[in-house]
View 1 (cartoon, helix red, strand yellow):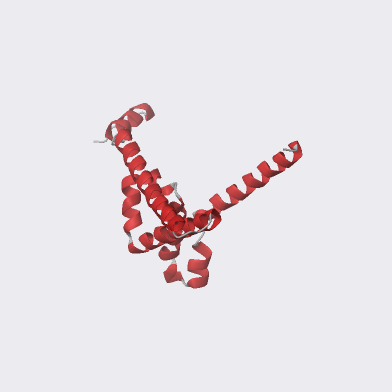
View 2 (view 1 turned 60 degrees about the vertical axis):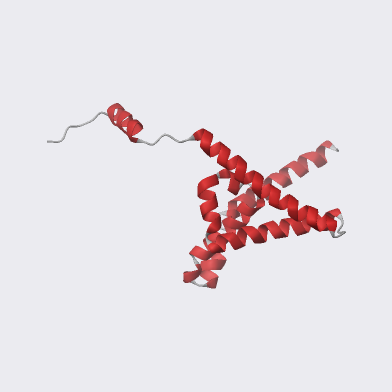
Length: 148
């Protein structure tokens, strides 16, 4: 025999059954992994500086290397495991951007290079790019109007 629950009873039932997130553990994992990613970037930057490159070249080398590492680790399936452990600690750095482009490309490659890889590659990163460019134009316009 089935009994009917009120919506409040059902909400309470679901609340009791849902696992409680481990906020402290998640924050610590994000902090550590995000910090380690930044440490790798700093190591690349320091190495490039030691070879005598100027600051502009060092910045370019570091960014390109981090994007490559993020894409490479995504291709090997390692970055997804890092992301499951670290959450935002792996998504926020530039390696997360590389992951957001490579993951859909790999997922949709069986649909072909045009309608799969080409069409779906920016499915995650596209909105971020559009929002970033739009906000930068808006802020640049405000900056220009105010004459600073």
